Image 1 (cartoon, rainbow, N blue to C red):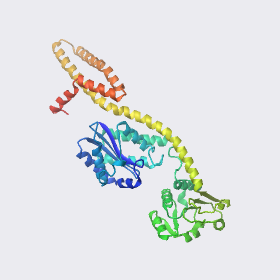
Image 2 (cartoon, one colour):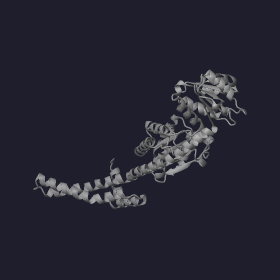
Image 3 (cartoon, rainbow, N blue to C red):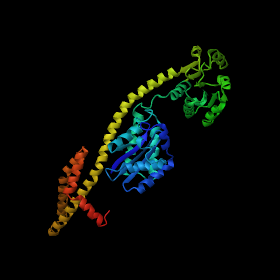
Length: 432
């Protein structure tokens, strides 16, 4: 049984390429047809997210031709052959295990420590289980990977602290207002930054979302996607007294919200706290509003400072996670390498027991004067001899850590005892 991984990610492919490999759930079923049509592939799991598309496989051939997997990779995505090839990576054996454990621990993510990948890997594995494309190796590998990912979340702070301007903005709002379900937020501007912020606000169940923009249609398009309310920029500025969180990201050359306006707004709010987040360059909000009571203002420099601190903290935690991953890879690798050992030892013991039974029965036929107690003693002695003879070779075979030596010992053992020939004889006679 041998492991192979073929895939691409944000490390190797630009977003326009990754867009072509974002797979709907139903395409997992095509993995089953891929396995059915291949004489070499035994198991497969497809992992597809917005930043990666990977297929994990096991095969009977050690040097499986990954080109056949690449061909299928193109076919399932409906892409002409060769288009994705420059962006694909190919990993084998231990590299596959390490890669998956790092992926599920978010060490390989676009944003280190992001929370979504653990669930995405779990979903991919469940889909593979449902379509029956997994088996002994991938089941164990993915279950162990998920356990590692969970352990990383519970024992480290790899996911603490937001590391994007938009997510930091929402995290700061949560610290000020605790429960965003009770508060209204306004986005001034409808660009990419506003959309990212809207996504985070909605994920935190903001009570009401208002989108204000100079071009009303752009505000309407964004508001519709996030079940918000669209207004013109002028109307939005008039509505600020009823809003608790204002996130502004327009392209205005002059501040759209001055101190004098905020004085009137705070009077109308009866000095209830308001959180202003200015992520525009040049700034949308007059920095002097910080002088007003209960007006909390963060600009892009403030936010980037928080992002930098959080990123630094995550990188420190990432070192701890790497240590956890390395340890768990070694543990899994020991089990994986012993897969070939276990059936060989079982065959050897079966062969030895066959010889023991044959010779014991021959001897017992000539020792019919023995009592039942004597017969049991002789039989126990024969088993003990076999166990003692096989104990040390078994221990040494399991202890061999270097793959090259283990393979040599396995081949030698199988050759010296003729285990492959015996297995072929058994198969030709109709055995299992």
